[in-house]
Image (cartoon, rainbow, N blue to C red; front, top):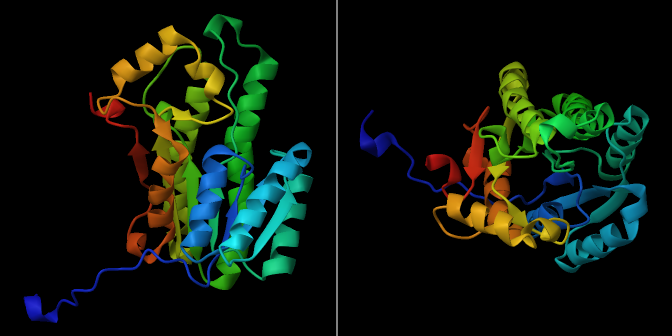
Length: 263
Protein backbone atom coordinates (compact mmCIF):
# COMPACT_ATOMS: atom_id res chain seq x y z
CA UNK A 1 0.00 0.00 0.00
CA UNK A 2 1.43 3.44 -0.90
CA UNK A 3 2.43 5.41 2.15
CA UNK A 4 0.27 8.34 1.09
CA UNK A 5 -2.80 6.13 1.54
CA UNK A 6 -2.01 5.51 5.22
CA UNK A 7 -3.65 7.92 7.64
CA UNK A 8 -0.85 8.82 10.06
CA UNK A 9 -3.02 9.50 13.06
CA UNK A 10 -2.08 8.71 16.66
CA UNK A 11 -5.04 6.85 18.22
CA UNK A 12 -6.39 8.41 21.38
CA UNK A 13 -6.15 6.96 24.86
CA UNK A 14 -9.05 9.12 25.98
CA UNK A 15 -12.16 7.41 27.35
CA UNK A 16 -14.60 10.30 27.02
CA UNK A 17 -18.22 9.20 26.96
CA UNK A 18 -17.40 5.68 28.19
CA UNK A 19 -18.71 3.93 31.29
CA UNK A 20 -16.22 1.78 33.20
CA UNK A 21 -16.96 -0.82 35.87
CA UNK A 22 -14.02 -1.55 38.19
CA UNK A 23 -14.16 -4.24 40.87
CA UNK A 24 -12.21 -4.14 44.11
CA UNK A 25 -11.93 -0.38 43.74
CA UNK A 26 -11.67 0.57 47.40
CA UNK A 27 -7.88 0.46 47.53
CA UNK A 28 -4.68 -0.42 45.70
CA UNK A 29 -4.75 -1.14 41.98
CA UNK A 30 -8.55 -0.88 41.84
CA UNK A 31 -8.58 2.57 43.42
CA UNK A 32 -5.78 3.85 41.17
CA UNK A 33 -7.42 2.35 38.08
CA UNK A 34 -10.77 3.96 38.84
CA UNK A 35 -9.25 7.40 39.27
CA UNK A 36 -7.16 6.97 36.11
CA UNK A 37 -10.27 5.98 34.16
CA UNK A 38 -11.99 9.15 35.36
CA UNK A 39 -8.97 11.28 34.47
CA UNK A 40 -9.08 9.74 30.98
CA UNK A 41 -12.73 10.82 30.68
CA UNK A 42 -14.82 7.81 31.76
CA UNK A 43 -17.71 7.73 34.18
CA UNK A 44 -17.18 4.96 36.72
CA UNK A 45 -19.12 2.28 38.52
CA UNK A 46 -16.89 1.18 41.39
CA UNK A 47 -17.41 -1.86 43.58
CA UNK A 48 -16.16 -3.23 46.85
CA UNK A 49 -17.21 -5.73 49.49
CA UNK A 50 -20.20 -4.57 51.57
CA UNK A 51 -17.96 -4.10 54.61
CA UNK A 52 -15.60 -1.77 52.72
CA UNK A 53 -18.11 0.73 51.37
CA UNK A 54 -16.72 3.63 53.40
CA UNK A 55 -13.39 3.36 51.59
CA UNK A 56 -15.24 3.06 48.29
CA UNK A 57 -17.22 6.24 48.97
CA UNK A 58 -13.93 8.09 49.33
CA UNK A 59 -12.78 6.78 45.94
CA UNK A 60 -16.09 7.82 44.40
CA UNK A 61 -15.60 11.31 45.82
CA UNK A 62 -12.20 11.57 44.11
CA UNK A 63 -13.74 10.51 40.80
CA UNK A 64 -16.44 13.14 41.17
CA UNK A 65 -13.77 15.71 41.96
CA UNK A 66 -12.28 14.89 38.56
CA UNK A 67 -15.61 15.93 37.04
CA UNK A 68 -16.96 12.47 36.24
CA UNK A 69 -19.92 10.48 37.52
CA UNK A 70 -19.21 7.80 40.12
CA UNK A 71 -21.58 5.11 41.34
CA UNK A 72 -20.29 3.07 44.31
CA UNK A 73 -21.95 -0.35 44.61
CA UNK A 74 -21.36 -3.43 46.78
CA UNK A 75 -20.21 -6.69 45.21
CA UNK A 76 -19.50 -10.04 46.79
CA UNK A 77 -17.68 -12.48 44.52
CA UNK A 78 -18.40 -15.12 43.40
CA UNK A 79 -22.01 -14.81 44.60
CA UNK A 80 -24.24 -14.96 41.52
CA UNK A 81 -27.09 -12.99 43.11
CA UNK A 82 -24.64 -10.21 43.98
CA UNK A 83 -23.25 -10.21 40.43
CA UNK A 84 -26.70 -9.99 38.88
CA UNK A 85 -27.82 -7.26 41.27
CA UNK A 86 -24.68 -5.23 40.60
CA UNK A 87 -24.99 -5.35 36.82
CA UNK A 88 -28.71 -4.66 36.96
CA UNK A 89 -28.18 -1.58 39.11
CA UNK A 90 -25.26 -0.44 36.96
CA UNK A 91 -27.32 -0.63 33.77
CA UNK A 92 -30.30 1.04 35.43
CA UNK A 93 -28.09 3.91 36.61
CA UNK A 94 -25.64 4.38 33.73
CA UNK A 95 -27.45 2.78 30.81
CA UNK A 96 -24.54 0.62 29.66
CA UNK A 97 -21.08 -0.73 30.53
CA UNK A 98 -18.33 -0.07 27.97
CA UNK A 99 -15.33 -1.21 30.01
CA UNK A 100 -15.03 -3.90 32.67
CA UNK A 101 -11.91 -4.17 34.82
CA UNK A 102 -11.89 -7.42 36.79
CA UNK A 103 -9.54 -6.33 39.55
CA UNK A 104 -10.98 -7.97 42.68
CA UNK A 105 -8.88 -10.89 43.86
CA UNK A 106 -7.60 -12.71 46.94
CA UNK A 107 -4.56 -14.69 48.01
CA UNK A 108 -4.04 -17.16 50.86
CA UNK A 109 -0.26 -17.65 50.96
CA UNK A 110 0.61 -21.10 52.31
CA UNK A 111 3.00 -23.92 51.56
CA UNK A 112 1.33 -26.31 49.12
CA UNK A 113 1.28 -29.07 51.77
CA UNK A 114 -0.71 -26.79 54.08
CA UNK A 115 -3.36 -25.51 51.65
CA UNK A 116 -6.86 -26.57 52.72
CA UNK A 117 -9.90 -27.14 50.58
CA UNK A 118 -11.40 -23.96 52.02
CA UNK A 119 -8.26 -21.97 51.08
CA UNK A 120 -8.40 -23.32 47.54
CA UNK A 121 -12.10 -22.60 47.16
CA UNK A 122 -11.77 -19.02 48.43
CA UNK A 123 -8.94 -18.16 46.04
CA UNK A 124 -10.38 -19.87 42.98
CA UNK A 125 -13.90 -18.75 43.85
CA UNK A 126 -13.04 -15.05 43.80
CA UNK A 127 -10.23 -15.05 41.25
CA UNK A 128 -11.57 -17.50 38.67
CA UNK A 129 -15.28 -18.06 39.21
CA UNK A 130 -15.97 -14.44 40.08
CA UNK A 131 -14.04 -13.10 37.09
CA UNK A 132 -15.71 -15.49 34.67
CA UNK A 133 -19.30 -15.02 35.73
CA UNK A 134 -19.07 -11.24 36.08
CA UNK A 135 -17.48 -11.11 32.62
CA UNK A 136 -20.24 -13.31 31.23
CA UNK A 137 -22.97 -11.15 32.76
CA UNK A 138 -21.38 -7.89 31.57
CA UNK A 139 -20.63 -9.32 28.11
CA UNK A 140 -24.35 -9.91 27.57
CA UNK A 141 -24.91 -6.20 28.13
CA UNK A 142 -21.97 -5.29 25.89
CA UNK A 143 -23.39 -7.42 23.09
CA UNK A 144 -26.66 -5.48 23.30
CA UNK A 145 -24.81 -2.16 23.09
CA UNK A 146 -22.44 -3.17 20.30
CA UNK A 147 -19.21 -4.17 22.05
CA UNK A 148 -16.77 -3.21 24.75
CA UNK A 149 -13.46 -3.86 26.49
CA UNK A 150 -12.84 -6.39 29.27
CA UNK A 151 -9.54 -6.20 31.17
CA UNK A 152 -8.64 -8.89 33.67
CA UNK A 153 -6.06 -8.12 36.34
CA UNK A 154 -4.11 -11.37 36.33
CA UNK A 155 -0.54 -11.46 37.63
CA UNK A 156 2.97 -12.31 36.59
CA UNK A 157 2.20 -15.34 38.78
CA UNK A 158 -0.06 -16.48 35.96
CA UNK A 159 3.03 -17.26 33.88
CA UNK A 160 5.68 -18.10 36.53
CA UNK A 161 5.55 -19.88 39.86
CA UNK A 162 6.45 -18.65 43.32
CA UNK A 163 6.56 -20.08 46.80
CA UNK A 164 3.42 -20.39 48.94
CA UNK A 165 1.13 -19.57 46.04
CA UNK A 166 -0.19 -22.86 44.68
CA UNK A 167 -3.80 -21.66 44.74
CA UNK A 168 -3.01 -18.11 43.67
CA UNK A 169 -0.65 -18.96 40.80
CA UNK A 170 -3.01 -21.57 39.41
CA UNK A 171 -5.96 -19.19 39.59
CA UNK A 172 -4.05 -16.43 37.80
CA UNK A 173 -2.79 -18.88 35.16
CA UNK A 174 -6.44 -19.74 34.67
CA UNK A 175 -7.21 -16.05 34.14
CA UNK A 176 -4.50 -15.81 31.48
CA UNK A 177 -5.98 -18.67 29.47
CA UNK A 178 -9.58 -17.66 30.17
CA UNK A 179 -8.68 -14.30 28.65
CA UNK A 180 -7.64 -16.05 25.44
CA UNK A 181 -10.82 -18.12 25.24
CA UNK A 182 -13.15 -15.17 25.84
CA UNK A 183 -11.21 -13.10 23.30
CA UNK A 184 -11.77 -15.81 20.68
CA UNK A 185 -15.44 -16.35 21.42
CA UNK A 186 -16.45 -12.71 21.86
CA UNK A 187 -14.47 -11.11 19.04
CA UNK A 188 -17.52 -11.48 16.78
CA UNK A 189 -19.41 -9.24 19.21
CA UNK A 190 -16.69 -6.55 19.07
CA UNK A 191 -15.59 -7.27 22.63
CA UNK A 192 -11.85 -7.12 23.25
CA UNK A 193 -10.67 -9.24 26.18
CA UNK A 194 -7.15 -8.74 27.55
CA UNK A 195 -5.29 -9.18 30.81
CA UNK A 196 -2.55 -7.41 32.73
CA UNK A 197 0.06 -9.27 34.77
CA UNK A 198 1.56 -7.02 37.44
CA UNK A 199 4.56 -7.98 39.52
CA UNK A 200 4.42 -7.58 43.30
CA UNK A 201 2.68 -4.25 43.95
CA UNK A 202 3.12 -2.33 47.19
CA UNK A 203 -0.25 -1.30 48.63
CA UNK A 204 -1.71 -0.99 52.11
CA UNK A 205 -2.99 -4.57 51.80
CA UNK A 206 0.34 -6.03 50.63
CA UNK A 207 2.56 -4.06 53.03
CA UNK A 208 2.92 -7.03 55.42
CA UNK A 209 4.49 -9.03 52.58
CA UNK A 210 7.19 -6.42 52.15
CA UNK A 211 7.79 -6.12 55.89
CA UNK A 212 9.58 -9.48 55.69
CA UNK A 213 13.18 -8.45 54.85
CA UNK A 214 14.15 -11.86 53.47
CA UNK A 215 11.15 -11.96 51.15
CA UNK A 216 11.63 -8.36 50.07
CA UNK A 217 15.27 -9.02 49.21
CA UNK A 218 14.29 -12.08 47.17
CA UNK A 219 11.65 -10.12 45.25
CA UNK A 220 14.01 -7.26 44.45
CA UNK A 221 16.66 -9.72 43.30
CA UNK A 222 14.20 -11.13 40.76
CA UNK A 223 13.12 -7.75 39.32
CA UNK A 224 15.74 -6.34 36.90
CA UNK A 225 14.44 -2.77 37.29
CA UNK A 226 15.28 -3.04 40.97
CA UNK A 227 12.02 -2.12 42.66
CA UNK A 228 8.59 -3.48 43.42
CA UNK A 229 5.61 -1.94 41.70
CA UNK A 230 3.22 0.79 42.73
CA UNK A 231 -0.47 0.90 41.81
CA UNK A 232 0.32 3.86 39.56
CA UNK A 233 2.64 1.64 37.52
CA UNK A 234 -0.31 -0.48 36.39
CA UNK A 235 -2.94 2.09 35.41
CA UNK A 236 -1.34 3.20 32.14
CA UNK A 237 -1.60 -0.36 30.83
CA UNK A 238 -5.25 -0.54 31.90
CA UNK A 239 -6.19 2.75 30.23
CA UNK A 240 -4.33 1.72 27.07
CA UNK A 241 -6.23 -1.57 26.79
CA UNK A 242 -9.52 0.22 27.48
CA UNK A 243 -8.92 2.83 24.79
CA UNK A 244 -9.14 3.04 21.00
CA UNK A 245 -5.37 2.66 20.90
CA UNK A 246 -5.84 -1.05 21.68
CA UNK A 247 -8.72 -1.77 19.29
CA UNK A 248 -6.69 -4.48 17.51
CA UNK A 249 -5.38 -6.03 20.74
CA UNK A 250 -7.27 -8.99 22.15
CA UNK A 251 -6.39 -12.24 23.92
CA UNK A 252 -3.16 -10.71 25.19
CA UNK A 253 -1.63 -10.56 28.68
CA UNK A 254 0.47 -7.43 29.15
CA UNK A 255 3.10 -8.04 31.83
CA UNK A 256 3.93 -5.05 34.03
CA UNK A 257 6.63 -6.85 35.96
CA UNK A 258 9.84 -4.84 35.94
CA UNK A 259 11.45 -7.52 33.79
CA UNK A 260 10.84 -10.47 36.16
CA UNK A 261 9.61 -12.80 33.40
CA UNK A 262 12.32 -11.71 30.94
CA UNK A 263 15.02 -13.53 32.93
